[in-house]
Image 1 (cartoon, helix red, strand yellow):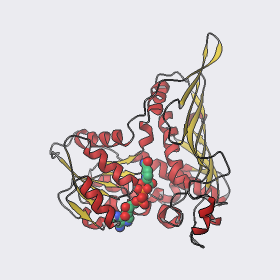
Image 2: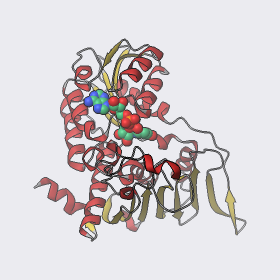
Image 3: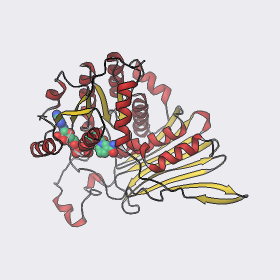
Image 4: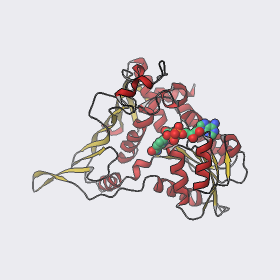
Length: 373
Ligand SMILES: NC(=O)c1ccc[n+]([C@@H]2O[C@H](COP(=O)([O-])OP(=O)(O)OC[C@H]3O[C@@H](n4cnc5c(N)ncnc54)[C@H](O)[C@@H]3O)[C@@H](O)[C@H]2O)c1
């Protein structure tokens, strides 16, 4: 049942000035019926620059001052992960709708508290899983929904970087602030893609391992070898640099997940998925964020194996995420269970870290029961 008193234009506040914050801001301004009213972030020069560039009249150094405004309809949360829950909950409890960057939170428990706040406040909560809106993923989603792969029984999902630790010594490499390393940062995207493409199957068990071999030695950052000496000695690196997980899904399917910020693998940034189905297969392989020629469909033509390379577009990314979120705010069910997919991903990532720590397979039903105790 759509809410009847949706104001126009919708008044938006964005918290965070990094890639995520600017991307949200830009994409709101490309939509009709939206006014960017407030922006918050710690970097004073960047705050002023973005404020001028995007004509945002109210600028704040702290998120609390932005969320305290009583004239905002929407808050976008684009901060380090440890601030997702406090900002999202405060915004929801004061009646704003929330678009939160991935991951929804550092843990399943935190994600649950955000989803509960959305339910109690009857406000929309969505998580920005922008890679669903890539051109290759859109084509593959339609192909799978058409039944052309048959029953998909095994998926490999990975995001690997040769030397791509973001912000060595910043919030990204702090366990407390980020909640984890490449698994929660990059793995969450490809885990999301796999579950989304498979139609949200339940995950029964997880067996995972994590490694921290290069990061703690100051290796694997986005720095040239000659710059390594410039990384401060003792820079905290508290998270994994490689994670791998094997998941058993309902219906007998399996999912192999791998995520790394730094490994001795092929150079650059490489993410994608491989899907094996009873009637066909598919592979998305994205090298350094390219979008052309990234999808292969494996099928039989006249009884012989064939590969199809569909003609692709770049896709819309955050533009579609923001548009879909605004549509839900305007027309969605205020009594709906919002943010559930973000919550499911957070619980699965918890299970991966628990499995890696304990060195054993973890059942998702046990995990949920333990959290409920
Ligand atoms: N979906 C994507 O493709 C994508 C890409 C990059 C980042 N992200 C996500 O977006 C979030 C931010 O990542 P980023 O790379 O933009 O980080 P960043 O470090 O570049 O930016 C974080 C921003 O948060 C602000 N901030 C920190 N504490 C604050 C406070 N108390 N009050 C107000 N502002 C505060 C900082 O000043 C900074 O502007 C993360 O959760 C990350 O996982 C998503």
